[in-house]
Structure formats: C-alpha cells, structure tokens
Length: 144
Image (cartoon, rainbow, N blue to C red):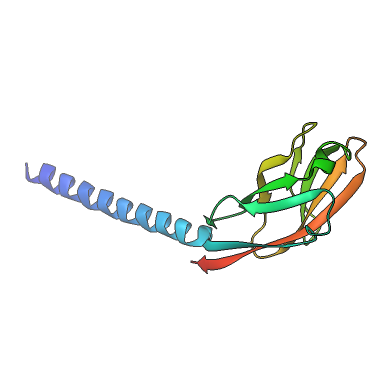
C-alpha cells in the first residue's frame, strides 16, 4: 500500500507539474500572440473629391488584427461606373482584402483594413479597369 500511495503522490506531482507547464505555455502564447487595439478611429483621404466612394466607416471599436469596415459607394459607382470589384492594398503593396461588387450594390461590408498603417482602397469596373482610390488609416490605442 505504501508503494501505491508513493506512486499516486508521484503521479499527482507529475500531473501538477505538467499542468503548470501547460498553463505557462498557454499564457506565453497568448501574451506574445499580439495586442488588442481599442478606440479605433478611421482617417480617410479622398472621399470628398471621389465620384465613386461615398463613405468608409468602421464596423467595430476594437480589434486584435485587421479592422472591419463598410464601404459605401455613390449612385454613380453603382450605376454608371459599373464598379464590380473593391480591393485594399497596404503600404507595402500587398493585398489585404479583395471582394466583388454586384451590379447596383452600394454598400460592401466586412472590408478588412490594416491597423496603424496607411492603405489604399481601390475600385475597378466590369472591364477590370482601375476607376478610383482613397487612402485610409486606422488608428487607436494598443493594449498589450
């Protein structure tokens, strides 16, 4: 019986140690996985002079990665310019998001925008020709 109790005690200690190590690894993973950005605010350049983009607004007030936005197109974009695609390109020239626009559609949701860096929202027509662009920047406070 004494051996059984010693083995059981040893296993409990091993399990506790393993649990402790697993907890530490999980906490470290969460701690280094990224930060949360709160109080998001969108800076937009070019909408006032655009015949295509009516507005761009954020869909959330915080995020851990990319911000989600809604892009509203003008009547001209929906009808006359035949806008069929939107895209978001970051400051390094990499695609962040791309999506289709249906004929007559004026609002596109779930558009992803990078945090704390400039990006360009571009519009292309049914012939895949570039039509217009606006510059955006999402800013906020980062919490580690």
